[in-house]
Amino acid sequence: MTSVTLLQLPAMRLDEQHFWSEMCQGNTAAFEKLYSYFATDLFRYGYRISTDHDLVQDSIQDLFLNLWNKRTVLKEVDSPRFYLYRSLRNKLIRSFESNRFVFSNDGELSDQQMPYVADIESCWISDEDHRVQLEKLHCALKKLPIRQQEAIQLRYYHDFSAEQIAQIMNINQQSVRNLQNRAMQQLRSELPFFPVSLLSVAILIP
Amino acid sequence: MDRYANYSLQDFLQDESFIRWVKYPDPESDQYWQFVKDQHFSNSDLIDKAAAMIKALAGFYPQVPDCEIQKGHQAILERLEKSTVFPLKRLINYTGIAASFLILSAISLWFFKPSVKLPFSQTVISDGFDSKTLSNETQEPKLITLSDGSTIILSHGSEISYEMENSARREVYLSGEATFSVVKNAERPFYVYTNGLTTKVLGTRFKVSAYKHTDNVKVEVSAGRVRVYSSSTEGDHAEKQGIVLTPNQKAVYTKKDFQITRTVVPKPVVLVSATQLKSYIYTDTPLSQIFEGLEQIYGIKVIYDKEKFKDCKLNMVLSDESLFEKLELIGKVVEGRYNLIDGQVVFIGDGCSE
Image (cartoon, rainbow over all chains, first blue to last red; front, side):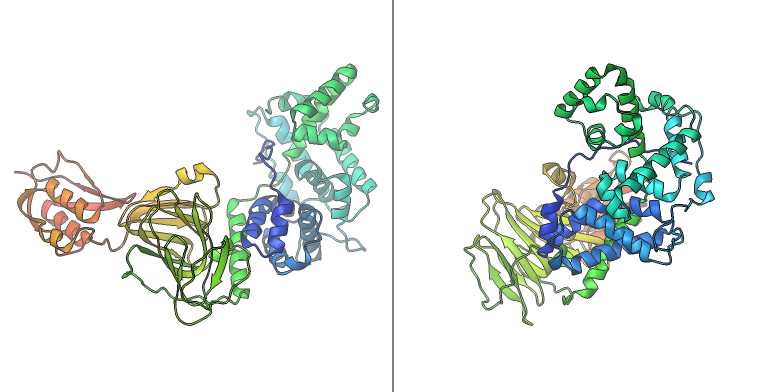
């Protein structure tokens, strides 16, 4: 069954620069705060691009341990958030164990990589729920190639700009737009009444 | 603003400031986008659709179980520990020291404030500065006297960092092991920060154990009152969410789920003087009086059905066995049994027939 989570706005943005520079100076409390703040979203990102959840777990652990060990040279990092996402993606890409990544010749995640059928079949739509439209949309999203899903999640859930997404995914900005446009086209064919029908649902979202 | 006149749905979906407004609206941007809507009335429906779409897309992310995140947290902690040359020491019991408490913390270096380590050259230091970090590199425990008169005995290989200049509170961050003798000052509570758990001292004696290899932090109180609460929540309500421990009560803080549970210490100590203790001798006395006696001696409340046990009368001397042995004994005599629930004794049974 698909579980649908409505958008939740963060009550307050952590002053990540402050905690980052504290962490660079060896403040373990700040380091721990950074973990608590970023871990959930990094896991959500990792799960999007890799089905190997143990690998995601290991990569996030390594990421934070590296962070601590290299803290003295990390002072120059402009956006900790961006740094963390990009590092996580690079780690996952580099791990050959990753069973979801299929590499094209340049070692990048292939555009053609489609999600596992098992993942799509888990989309079970409950007709008695008034959020059925939203579920349908998320279900349709899950059928998109992984890279399109990744671009959408980075944009609309993780709040990265097109420019940052391009750098995280190691492609140019136009490619990010293309990924997104192709995703939208496919969604339209998947959901013929979309997004008009969606509107009736979205209004229910406070 | 005219640029929105010919905007398509796709254009709105890719407009950074539009996305920001939909996800994080504020009065200023509300006003701006309302204005855009009014200006291009024909597009108003489009704007609503685009906003609905963004909201729906923003909810698209995989579910991650909380335990995975906790698991990562724990693993990072442990892997960091391994790579740190931080000697850990076994528990040393300083029970002889009056008004003191022992804090053990293997992982509390997480809460360590960054500061320069000072070589420990004096056995007694009176501080006159703001925040200090002291470590003990020698084999012997070292005594530190704080400006408020409280003393800290710092064990080998341990470090503390403390803030004594704040007029509202006295704060200590501990890594390793230390024994504290705190001078009571209700105006300036004394806080000890260890791994995930904050302990607030209200003038007392207690022990904290935060071993690295266990999944929990334990606080045992032998005198006075102590408030414990999770360090992960902040603000005044965090303290209110915590619990107060009275003598012979113990809190167990589970790191995994941030739960604090209250129970009774394994070996409750006698809180009255030896002379007083000898006076607790009962002959053919109602159970209610005996339970009252136990409450006075150990400070632990006994909850039972007064009506059911009203006919139970016992002969007992309370100065001999431990609290639990006495409860067992009472249980045998009146055919009842006890449970420890939330730091209290709950005694159940069918009562006595006359």
